[in-house]
Image 1 (cartoon, rainbow, N blue to C red):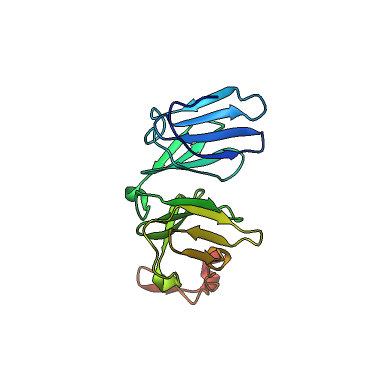
Image 2: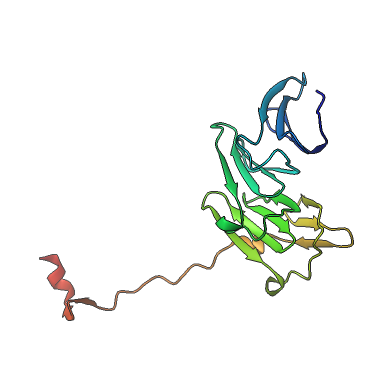
Length: 193
């Protein structure tokens, strides 16, 4: 298949479809064996026709990015456009990758952040989280066989284990000490009547 613009990024899904991000014409989905065009996704759905990055969350959710983050559902055709307004640390995404727990990690000029698709939430990380000073020109990301993430810039790389950030601290189990209604204490046995 011939594209009318640069093909910036691609991935092959489990159904052997090739997803291609282009510089001016959005995203193309091709049959991996025949090269036949299956679907064309453009700025009628996406944030723009320029899409430089791609990552796959699961069988149906794909992330595309350039100036904003697109969370595209291949089964329904719905697209969620995410920006600084929704909590993204920067609208400029330099690289992105999905970890083994299903979180999308984004390297931006303003730092690293993690996106939880199911909770629709972003978490930001910086030097206080033991990330050193990051270059503002990162261009690549990968997940190693043991689950570590590598973000590469022109003169440095950042390697970390996302598992240290994916676990949450569980709060202590609450203990009921007393019950008060309209400034009057209630006895537990009075709650049964």
